[in-house]
Length: 341
Image 1 (cartoon, rainbow, N blue to C red):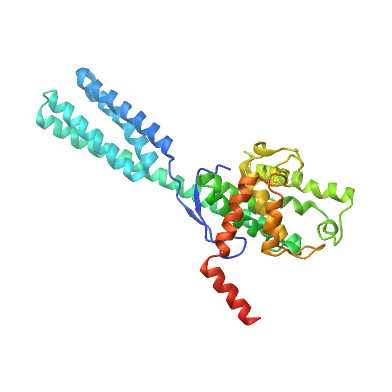
Image 2: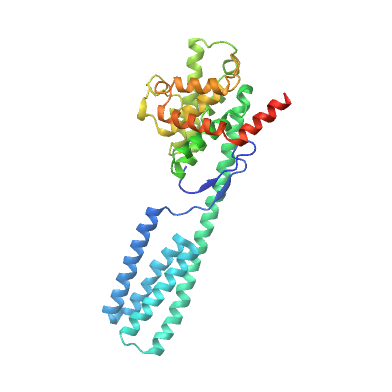
């Protein structure tokens, strides 16, 4: 999955949390824009110098303006088409006048080239727009698939209803506070929604067992990671989604599974997912215990910082929870609930 191709704006209000996602058109990144602009500027400059100094083939060289015009139109669509065409026509006119060409001939060539340049530019622009819309449609389908998979995961275990959505909400909240780049934040969201997809392959009697798991059952339960990785590699050849599944059960002190990674050897997204997943599990009812209160869960998180969880991620998360708990809106809601009890 190319997570840089399309940006997604989220409205987490229904279903899996991705149902109301709004897919926005892809935009070239800043480094690409700089490199492409520099390349086109050099191309235009070389063509212009050639027209000026190689007068016998100047008209032939002028047709080379098609290259930067079409490239600009394809990369930046209408804006690129207008700027590219206008720049090349202005330079062509200036060089032709400086070379002492006949005004009538220059005007004639300007009209011909203007029509041809505009046609080529806007054709390339339309092709680019169609490609962009295709990418948007493909990403919408991808998002719907991820949402359906997340729903299937939560339906497998009645005690984990909306678990994936809650993990996603906490993970994205942490990622935004840590100022992750948009592409990494989007990937984190998808990884969070699918982090327990391997539970589909775990027997129900193990998932919903009211008591402690036996050593054999625990080994089977740990297998949900490898099952999830195998599933996700089929829909994401680059393995970026699978990385989140692979890392979310690792411990900061190296005592986790499946690879026994520690500290920064665990991906940042994996460390964030571990915190979000751990906290969500603590405040949720399980077959073998009742949910902890928010205060109890926060104490548990703080107590496991630097052992189970990345202390920096825990620090960010706890500050967010305290800030959220002290907000007027939350306090008003709590007062309303107390009033009706």
